[in-house]
Length: 444
Image (tube, rainbow, N blue to C red; front, side, top):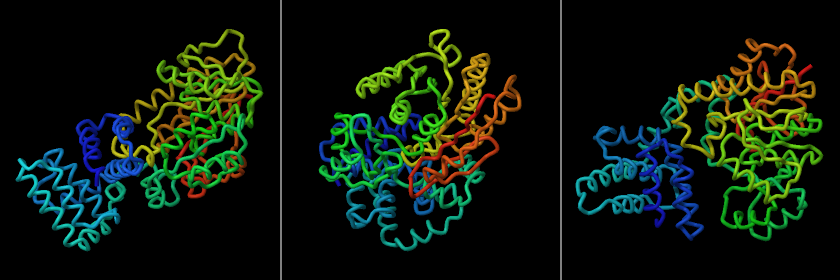
């Protein structure tokens, strides 16, 4: 279990400051690891513990004589790792798990060693009782280690709440969107097969679905045959490609994949790819330069003062607004317990300000016909709640109507729920999409 110590370092750092970005902490540690097998194991352990934190802590409360708050942070992390392996892993015998976890504690900390050894050995010895205890928990927030606000909001849109909670609790699958400007779909199929990458085909998206982001993929990506983009994230580009006329403003464009997919779908469009964040905009510009798209023009500006030459005709605006990213919990499991009412309210304020600023900015632009609002969230305050505020309090909004997207979403095989204003892309085993919300507005 060579991956145990690196996993422990990552988790200790994360739990010391859960406000840190788990993905960045993990990435920095993985850069030091040469073995692909160990890299995958570390990723699985780290995300597995974080993904199931609330459930693991519930088990510790039940099978430990110490209260959670009395257990030192690093010892608590080791207990979480140990219980995670006992409950979820079949790769190692229970006695080996207990021995390796206990061995990770310094000899000088004899009391802590004895405590962890006792808890894990007792759980391993009576594993049936442990599994029965966990299987009989009826609080969904504990079973799926998720905040109450997320359960409450998912309940509003989901026809099968527990199924969708389980979906959001899985390890993610990844989608490779083919660069069809320079490569044929069949060519990439052969490339992946030659490198022994297992995949499923999603030809309607010109994409391939894979289980793991192995190093070979990051080496291949340097040749620019594809880039990572979830099927749900591709929908905004699909909608715009279908409805746009000539010129598109992508307001929050970084990292650039949305604009690139749009260009692949409709290469005659001129696309202004804007972002307010200078660092993200720089990365986007590098991405666009690598893929050599001459019809995509990168910008750095605030949506309230768009940096476009006066007189430029814009007929479609994309507002892919910053959000809680609640729809991406599979690849961002640390968000499951981070998203709270304060975070939602802060994002909703930004989202509403962006919508009102853009609608006012383009109020006298006769060329603007469409505005697409999109977020990777299922929280009502960020989705239908924003549209409700826009349509009930914004001067000039009576010139806009919402467009039915049902046929387009069905064409691509999405499962969705229609709201009063927009559409939620629901979990789908066939497409493995993240949850998104889309509302398309047309100016009469």
